[in-house]
Length: 438
Image (cartoon, rainbow, N blue to C red; front, top):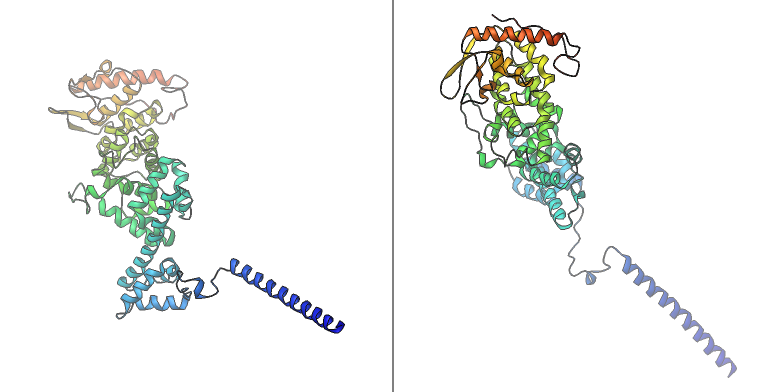
């Protein structure tokens, strides 16, 4: 009986140990199941579907090669569209393919993939209003550094990237292709005032986002200089936007105004007789009272071809109300250089009035000094305020003109005896020399 009890005890002990081991094993399996990233069997993943195998770079390259073949290219193209950004590296190797047709297909595939990614970023932003979704786009921080981080700036960013997604895509991927596309888009919308060629897309197709994107990318020094070298000018497309505040909202939209000013800082002045190209640019500056453009305007006035001083009237017409006392030395210098420029008839609204170029410069100097032009021999037109920068003043004959410049030289001589003539700051006395009358 004693032996039977011992055997029973041993069997119970053995069973207990095995049950403990079994329970420990069950607990371990449950733990693994809870922390596993993949299901143990299909019975746990009826709704997940089969796991897609990772496509190798070699397979992607094979598909890219097939896109360039005459047969089977459509199927390969569709497969690459589905792969999206994962095929970008291999596609970038082929975007400069010697066959233009194939190169366009590769570029198109990349554009589609990145565009899909941008749409995802926008959808994510619309859900949580978090701008971090755009931080991976390299131009984002560059843009904010120009316009500042505020809601108005961010709203304009969305307009720009919606209007010109290709430019933002290729800016990051390939500089030469980016510049090619930027040039083509500006050329597409510009207007030639001499041949009267209409732009290749209508005013209705051009939105504030398009124009703001052009200002933004052209404000980057390396691209603005390349555009000018290729004779591609944003100024040429302003003819059908200068009076449309929905496109050039430079008074109310501070972000677009800052982009415009930044572009203007990089823009070279047009140093030739043909200043018509910037005619609408000067008009925009005047219309929106962009004081930050003052140095650009004075540089333009100084650089205009002195062999044809009348070309400067395009500038004077729009900036005469923005001239400052510090501008007098430059104006005196221009007047001195062009005191024998001949005469020209300027239409004043009801007839033609005869001017010498120096007449208009003198009127503007007197306006800056708050001197009445009548005291210097000028006659005031009753119906014209400031046509072509004349402020409505003219000389009725050469005797008036001779008297005016005599009066000016006497006044000028008195001013030059002062320590700081005309202004409270030091001026360039090389420019300030008497102007001889007839």
